[in-house]
Image (cartoon, rainbow, N blue to C red):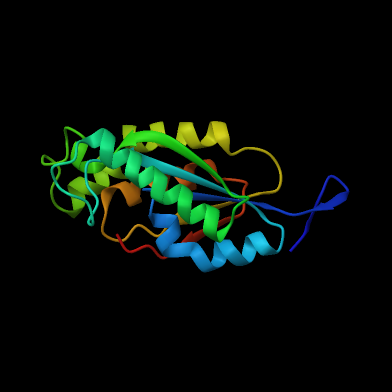
Length: 173
């Protein structure tokens, strides 16, 4: 639906924060398609895009190869579902590639390491904030059930959305 900004009607911009290349596709494809068909500007911010794993790929592939394949899959999805969408890859490392992956265990440690006060969350929030600004923006973030990268994206999105309309989407990692 059009919104009034500075005296004129304009379509909002949906800024979808996606922890990994496939999360927006798996969680919001129908919403993204319908929004695009109604003239809503879509921007997807894939946060943890350097990856060494994908369920359908040979485990012997290196990180560069897996990352390239996943980026290509995401681009192909957007081409088919909503060709006008913009994809932005932030280039952060997927959780298993980070040094703290095996050190952080248990719910409390995960909340401390990846919650709203964590250094990684603040770094991702700063990256998103520099890209998502201005009137007419709506931010969508993962509900963050069960995965530390999703938790970082949820908190980073909350941190940058103080005055911005905000929604969460169900994500199943």
